[in-house]
Image (tube, rainbow, N blue to C red; front, top):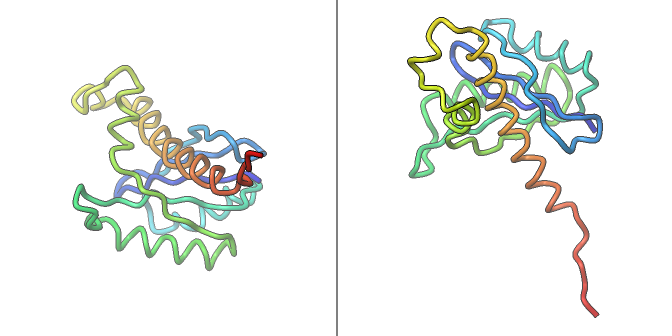
Length: 148
């Protein structure tokens, strides 16, 4: 089952897509955050054969929702309505920072004017969110091992 991961931002939206079995997340693309974002995502889901969508859930260190979360909840609801697919939230604390670290410890100042690095970072953050969801749910779906 193919999955889509989304790292939502007010300017850019990182996208990740899993392999066909839904085991490994891969950075895919970065889209501008526009009014027709849900339609673009719906089309991408259809083109890629996505069966489930995962959006990063942004919370602070006290587990309070960050200011972006009303927009995330709105996107979740819209995607559920437009695609008919299940949409889940996955904690995303520090995924963008981790994506930057994975990309040669690039500082935000180094990213200015370099669209390719921005794409890599945003799409990689989406892949980290999606992989977290995959790993967490895979562990829940495994039958328990009974020692005899």
